[in-house]
Length: 104
Image 1: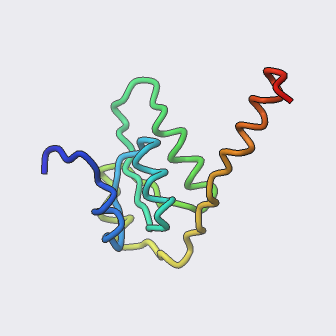
Image 2: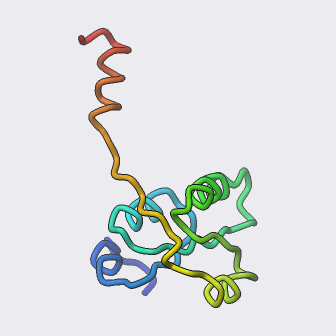
């Protein structure tokens, strides 16, 4: 498909997600507890996706590759080695902002 309002249902039904390294795509997939292979777009200027993908890979949460190594990654990966991604804690950020702005 070319466009869809939301991929949430597709991600929920998936056994494996292969995605670009956009923050939304990565975090939605990891929050669903789905294994994720992140394919880096090396042609992006100031590749912020690479930074996120590397960090998630170092944490053991995703497999990371580029287009030319995708098949090799799929053949060699062991999904049992992936670590669950810890849930977000938005209340900590809210508390931080409260402290910064003197609301507490």
